[in-house]
View 1 (tube, helix red, strand yellow):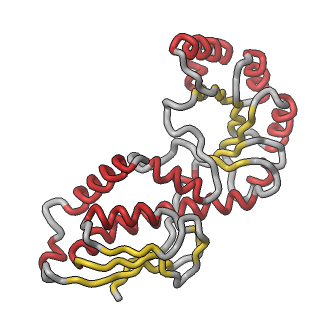
View 2 (cartoon, one colour):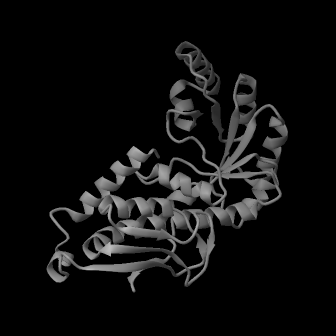
Length: 280
């Protein structure tokens, strides 16, 4: 996310939360009050989003003094202090929930990603994300995946061709979909990788026969079929396992020899990392 996009995102989120005014703070705390707070980690995990938290505070009030005490990607434990902030109490209170929402969400994603990455350690398989992200937060959530040791799949519909089941069915089959895609890329002068989804080993053979494909997604394949598909594909295309993959079975899929394992749950089944912002 560019600096300008991050600034706009923060402004919109603050407007969404503040509306006509933070009446709780306006009613109970003098406008001139100053204070300090610290962000306490309450659960072991991987921290992500500290630079975003800094920007939230500064967009809320540029006079706030923020000290970041940890690094994004660092393993944290209960009781760690991630940052401190000093200045206008009204500004600290206005920024508090947005800071926590972002940090907790990004840190939860980074933590789960790191667990998957550890499970496939030594296999050569890489853990990747999907487009199953929160609208407006994709760049931050995908950054959190990288912080946890994963890699990003495409950022959106614009930076990679991905022919899934519906594309194939609407196009009239794999061969037609791939042929039209190659013609489209040539006509538009685009250099984009082509990935095609396979629902069974028969479709893997069809994709290989069509040719010109960079990656084949093995969608909801079981372990024996994944072994067979990887052997069929060889070095003719990258391979990606997707669908029904959990921490319990991810290493089994990695040991099949696939290059990538995409996990939608990294960004859409999120358990946020517990933390709080407390006055001191």
